[in-house]
Image 1: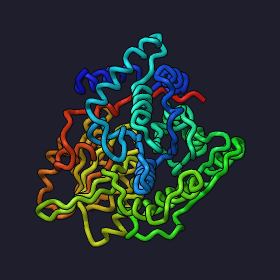
Image 2 (image 1 turned 180 degrees about the vertical axis):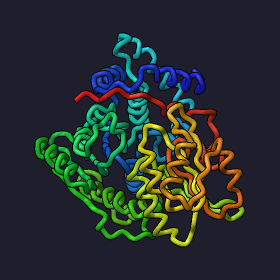
Image 3 (image 1 turned 90 degrees about the horizontal axis):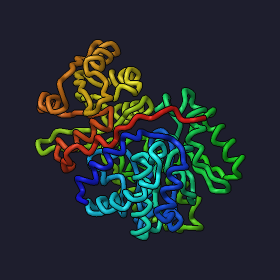
Length: 425
């Protein structure tokens, strides 16, 4: 099997949607030899900051000399970003081989119980990490936690970054309901670390931890972390860093990490598309950030107001229609005098004209214009000294390609597409 054929096979699995539950993932992993039994995990859930916290933990443990697997989603450009060992993307050859090895196993599922694409990819990742003899795997949930395919592992620690509104149509319409889904990753007697600040949501996590006899550590951004200690921009990253430090501390007896390795790890974190500042050859600054929900938009706004207070950026924005884009537009509208809204390369894109109207309504002084696509927006803003490209991670991924910061892959972002049913309660 060639890589292109493997990608097409994965596209075909999208027909099975996102059917929540753990039975299929457990069965598929068992057919694959239960590779998770050979691995140690840190399982990370939460609304925002999951990827950044994962990247920090990966960097710290890699600095300490461990062989570290990293499983995240969605990918920005290449599907291979989802499965990495020591920050090296899984090879095209290995993806092709793993898909070929999955195919006979999938024939053992009747049609109405066929695993979803995410479940197949989850087990592929487990196989690969076991083959690579990873010392530790940083393991990010896909959606929610309780019924997410990643929840078939028993980790060394469970991590819940925070609880905010996102994916309400599937996870629930209150923070307490969302927290209950995220808290589903808590395992009996396994330590839990969270930076959740919302008190009703935190109460749900505390109750679940008590019921599971799982020791709970609560962190906040009050831990003194200097900007110079972090390679990632944004005040909210201090909260993610405090969370990562707490996890490392909780696991010191099992995986000792010297203080200097912790500092080296934080100072060298790389996490593209999240407040990623790019300097073009002609001296322009471009800030890329996947602020795809209200909490993410507020973090972006706080960063711009504090760290770029003297700059007035041009904003390029695109979002998916199933996000709360009217509220996101209200948060971001005061930051720019000129705004280009664009469609996202997805069937779920929000209408660019509706986005422009929302920005104009929130900030009548700004000039908000709907343009045909990102390429046109970048061309129209080539004389701007400071540009912020934000909204959907799909848009950020396209920008990375168009700016030459990531190799073009021919459309693998479509593998992020899925339609989820209501999660069973």
